Length: 349
Ligand code: NAP
Ligand code: ZN
Ligand code: ZN
Image (cartoon, rainbow, N blue to C red; front, side, top):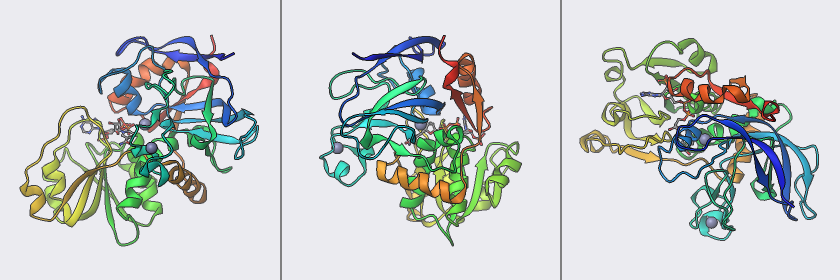
């Protein structure tokens, strides 16, 4: 019999969250049952709960930055035992046989991976995410959280961490490379720490100076406020790589012109509107505009281990179940410093 567990639900696009329950499936032989301790609030949760990306399934229980402890394991589980500290990120299944799954890049699964929430499993059942007290996930999609990272600080790594780690690695951030991070939010504050730890020279490009101290403390060497006249113009031919984490439209032309010849402007921010640019912003410097989507399971574990070794975690503010609806507005208004995490002990009625 499936288990009924407390959860925070939203019933329609933009509707307030309320307490309720969802069902978790019986433990299959390869499944791990997890007591969730914390779930991060990613801006992607907001895009989906407000149906800004279309096609949302309601009622919805968002949450794909999940950290907790293993409470039970199926008969054939090999990697995890009761008591292990684990995480779950943006997907909970994939086809396991396409070229990308075989290469450990399940984020590009050709069949389409199964999202942790707002999705249907291959069995047709709707998935419900981490704003809940427990979840059941196949062990292949479960990550191990290093001992040195507290669970609240670890939760945002499962999306914000891997989403920035993966493009930094792919585009070769490291010593001698100049990396800009646009937007100092949940993703941005992870990108700054990770790029700094990789040895790159890091610049924050934010709207205002209000986060300058934080940015420098997180590891930025330089800080630029786009609200200041001519700020980007002064940076022509500067960056090898720009990671754009902004959840809204940006001026691609102004950003691209700060790239060196051959540099790349990589979108991880996912605004729903079409983005446009002048071709001359690219061809004048053999520049690329690209995109990057979370990361595969293997690379997510690599990122977690990297964070463990370098003492990196998210900067979090713990909130309770009653605060989630208001926290969404604060994130959109730029008020988060830098990730809200829900203490799931506050969810049961
Ligand atoms: P967030 O915490 O809200 O951070 C976004 C940052 O963008 C803000 O802190 C702000 O930085 C800047 N910003 C916000 N509105 C802006 C505006 N109107 N104009 C200019 N800058 C603005 O969000 P997040 O959780 O980091 O997520 C960021 C984006 O990445 C979202 O669109 C999310 O859906 C997407 N995402 C994508 C992936 C992927 O796999 N590609 C994974 C996770 C999230 P400043 O105040 O410093 O300017
Ligand atoms: Zn996310
Ligand atoms: Zn696949």
